[in-house]
Image 1 (cartoon, rainbow, N blue to C red):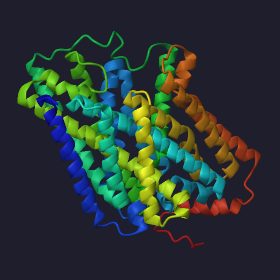
Image 2 (cartoon, one colour):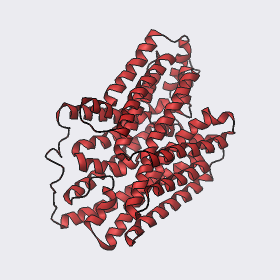
Image 3 (cartoon, rainbow, N blue to C red):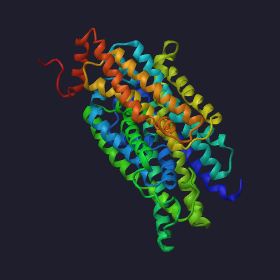
Image 4 (tube, rainbow, N blue to C red):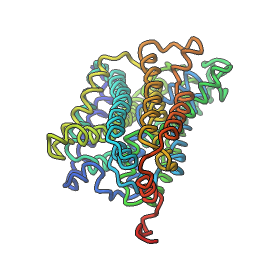
Length: 493
């Protein structure tokens, strides 16, 4: 390793130690099984919002958005717009009722609402699939970052992130990770904001060069032709509706004290995300002006490209620290969600609660870590976009109809989940092993949300109407629970 890699190495060590230290602090508060799963439902809105921001702003947000905007232009801004606006949809339709359901996980909600162990089992499989699909680009991004920062083999970064996540999640569960993720949101914001300000000053002193890369359509809000328009709408649908179906996002709302706190948390998250997403386009614009390489290393390489010497090294170390915070926080949230499902539905039958959770955390991290080392490299933002499409076509219809339509049945829910999962899985497999958008077939498979989500909703409604619930009274009672504020006693006439 040459001297250029020293800032990256220092950043990696500092972030890892800080993460473990904050997690150890949170460990003092983890005593019960409820602490490990949902932090005993006692996390206040501002702390919870920071933690959500920490886990939600993944490698795709920190590295991928800037690279996508540099490569494809302003149309790629739909990704951060959708990732932020998804919380508005979640606020209006899901946040408070989901908290009132009393569930620990999405499979818990499905079983409580529909009274079906089979639907619960199907939801468990889908939670694990989404979690692993989302973890894959986190580990690949960690390997890419460490390779760019200190010229290490790509497997080293993935292994370091996996090890730190397993230790933190296994030690303190949700209670501990809440403090870690809240700290990491503010670290990520600082790590992008300070270099952005410095680089903008340098750009101004250089005469504000504009650059010529990106092609004539770089600033257009939509892609060219009907395929570009379809792609844009599909991205919007996936990002707007996929947020509510992400297991690591949903589980956060179970940690609020009540439905009102869940709404306040969501409003605060909207503000935190809005501030953060102002920054990646700045890096894209500066990268275009200075001829940076259009890949996921843009944010990491831009400081040294624009300014040399000690200042460039310090700024590189800072953005590298933020990148590792992004991998660690998102991976931790996903590991919590997946390990909770594995512990409850598989390992809990043989192991006590906390032990099952810790074993589940090891499995939750180990499988996608191995896949990241074997699978072909993907654009980080594109891989995360597929996870959003998968979530939008499966859990979004289940939550929206389960909360707002009394007629949803177990058979209908299962049909819609299967339709959405099969459709998006086809797109995921095609993207992993081909991915060249040459014609309409490739575009439809590469961006499946626009046709998979309506199909999933239609399947749930059609099958539910064809086979009505044999016990509608149970559904009515549960719907009252979802929509009754906590301050109103449920036994009032």
